[in-house]
Amino acid sequence: MREHDLGGGRSNRRRRFDDDEPRYLKRRRPGAQAQVAVENPDDGPPTGDRWSTFTDSGTLHGPQPWPEWVVTDDGGIDTELGLLKTGKEADVFLIERSGPTSGRSVLMAAKRYRSSEHRMFHRDAGYLEGRRERESRLNRATGKRTSFGREVIAGQWAGAEFAALGRLWQIGAEYGGVRVPYPVQLVGTELLLEFVGSPDGEAAPRLVQTRPSMAELRSLWGQLVEALTVLARMGLAHGDLSPYNVLVHEGQLVLIDLPQVVDVVINPQGAQFLARDVTVMAKWFAARGLEHDPSPLVDDLLRDAGVG
Image 1 (cartoon, rainbow, N blue to C red):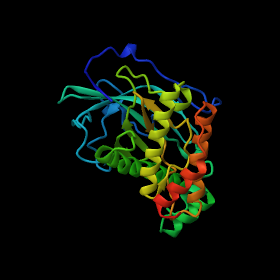
Image 2: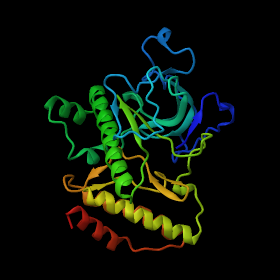
Image 3: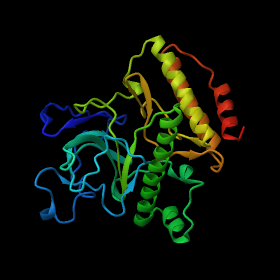
């Protein structure tokens, strides 16, 4: 993540369309920005797509102290630059936030969970065990998958990801061992995150897109074990870990896509989710010549989580 001066050449930034689900169209969906745009278009900024929502009431912010690159100016402007990724539950866009007071701008990733009619929360029942809402009306709605219930689920996913990223970022910043994008803010079901990539808007590749040498594979595996150990000691498992939701940036693994983060202790399927995370990743490394029996690592992680 790097800042850049206002007025830089935006035309040189490339739009990276890379998703593990090829059936999704790699283009902007009609009305994709409507959920986060200002209610009255006449009140919009003179340039860009919307006013910054950082100082709005109801906005949740990431851990403090905020990184120096975060633009907190009143009257900031957000400009959408393109689509980074499509997924089954959310789309991720490249956003530039400019601050008129500071004279700075920064690139961020805007992860937007879709409206209820366009979402496919696959296998969400298992993930949501252990984080049920107390209000019975909400439980009934989520159980029956009504439109309201699906909105509740969207809020649960967005809130869970925002909270997990905040906790992991703080631990990584203080102690190391795990790296995730900094969660800048959460408004409704839109997360604004640190953009992991180059200053010209080229996203860091996902692990599945890389062709590491054997030395690089060993380094990446070691980083993976460290990150999984940090999660386990927090009592958590990623829940849907694969080479598609791990980035490699400047030789470092960056975990992404954590809306389904699982409490290994509370969730009855927690141990299975953790074991699957390890098995999927071990299989990818083995296919490239670095073999590890996943069972001992699973046992170690379960002990770290207090359930072994």
